[in-house]
Length: 263
Image (tube, rainbow, N blue to C red; front, side):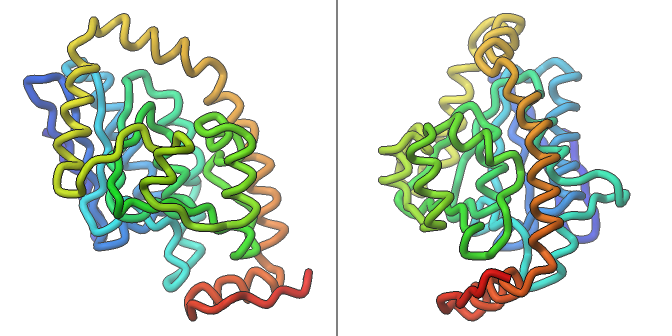
């Protein structure tokens, strides 16, 4: 077992006899993401890959939601700061895309914004009717990040990605399954078990071959993600000081439609 704890989150790793490493992260009900948590998740995945017993990884969140992205009700800047001030959360997304083991995601509740970006690093995603996804960036007046620019079209195609990104609408499990954002839809109380069973089916394969298959299928995805986050961060830096971004956040917190003025 690997156990990483800091004052406000935990990352717990269990590697079973079935060669599946369960990397569970916990930060309250919403599992808000920031640089420190993203780095800890990537560190845990790197550790189990280096240790050698695991042949597949399952990543679930322990709260009500898989990951609600940045905590806009708290300090938004926490999302953009790493545990040392230099490790940006997007860097950890690239590390997860590049890590060698097949990676599955169990999406309970919401995967919103940066949480969607985290879910997209996986090779497969299991969810339920209660699962929901959103790329709400247009409604927050904030350019997308977490390499979603390349990972969302890679998973669901350009047409569906454009729909979700430009509208910012929220979709639930059934539609997510139809467009390929989920690979399996199961009852909520069976979600973790079903995802684990599928990961174990993968882990029954030859370990060296599993790693090579993942690397071949992913190709240059991590490199493209690494390049695009430079552009994403530049656009976010340009848009964060704008009045429209402040309005988008205020409207989201008040659960009202935003009123934008293009400035």
